[in-house]
Image (cartoon, rainbow, N blue to C red; front, side, top):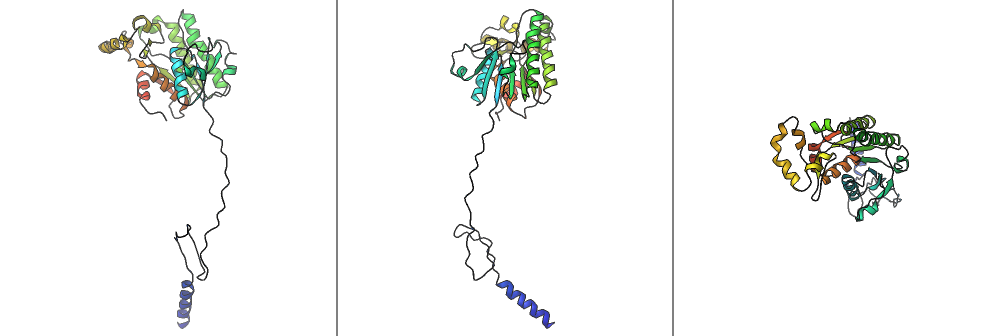
Length: 291
């Protein structure tokens, strides 16, 4: 028994000589000492080597039809977001005398020709197509369908991440009267959602407007909505929305800036859900803060 007590006493004495300073902030350091006769010294810290990390790659956006009413607003919105922007259209360089237009790389080409997109797609990470047109049913199918399908396939083969297509809302009876137009639009939508299952977005606005101009992808709008009164007409005609043939004509109008904002966000935000976005979705997304 005496032996056990003796050992315990010696252990206690030895432990008392070991000093732990768990948190000492004087002198700008935290020290640990096991020697009661040794003065605490700070750790020696060498200066870290500076590592030059390259900046994240810039998103490069290609706008098809960037000379048009919607396309020009898309280009401007993308530039405001700090993106590198190029555009391809049949006319090439924009005639707009605005400062932002000089910051766009303009390409001239025809989407009905497979060679037009080769150079324009180099280094592109996302595409927004605002291409559409009117005429005979066969012509409308080519412009709204075939031309966009060619672009979608070329972008897919180039490894483009995301593709946004500005399509059009259904307008009831007008779908029948403009069969080539709508058949082309829907064919392009199908191709897009097949080729870009995770990065394909279809926007379906109705009438598109801003403070100076009213427009729609189809000629219906230009026939009877030609000025600022158009929005008021649509608002007052809300009761007609319930009529099966006439109702779709009174789809809520949407500001062109809202369309451009949602299109650019959809083309660059990896968490933006793929699929079809109707006019109500466009309005909702446009009111959300950009990421």
